[in-house]
Image (cartoon, helix red, strand yellow):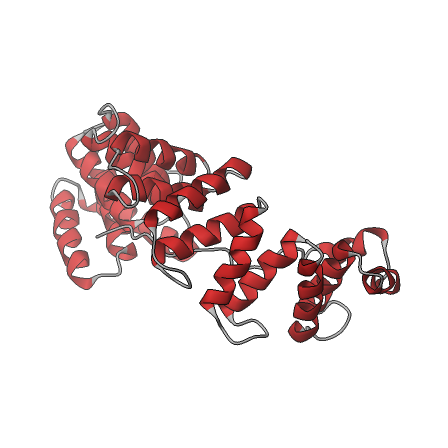
Length: 299
């Protein structure tokens, strides 16, 4: 069982919400006239309208044309959107190098999403030469403008694994803590482990259990398993075989790996031997309810 880091980056073009408020008081004809006069902001807005397809079918070719004009006029959002388009093959052939070039231009002008995207490119070598030191630089630059849980998880993992920086568990936990406060499930699990093992943090079983619970409520099977084990032993929580059974049963349900499921089930079944049959039945009903909702639980 592992909570995996995913190579995640923004894939949504910015500016697509403009039409929801009537182009901020402008009609399309006014916007087109402004764009035709070379107003970079209007060019970007017009590109966003074509991309969203609010005045007819979406037209990425037109959108990209206006984004290019806006980018030539210095519009940083247009630069970023061009990067997203090339990264994801939206209206153009996918080209990671061209995406990175546009991300770089936007990142150098302070665009936080572009800084993050460029950091991912540097970390993975996608479109640029892999350079984890530069990745850390751009992730940190992204955080200067906008706190974002994905950026913070990347920084935490890089300090944990000594990727581009010296290994520093305390610094890793600081970044995980920031992301966990925003509800990032990977960060919640990493922070919980830090408290449990005393890695970069003072050991605190109660804090560990609290953060495992948050991750478990989001469906993270390793957190559900660990919380079940803590209830089984009474570490950081009041000992309860019923709660142990509940969280272990949920972990069986959430865990995608068959072998891991079997191992967790053995521990779940052991907890059941300490419970009256009616308690097991009632707990199974709670598990079924959780499965039916497909959501976390406040238990």
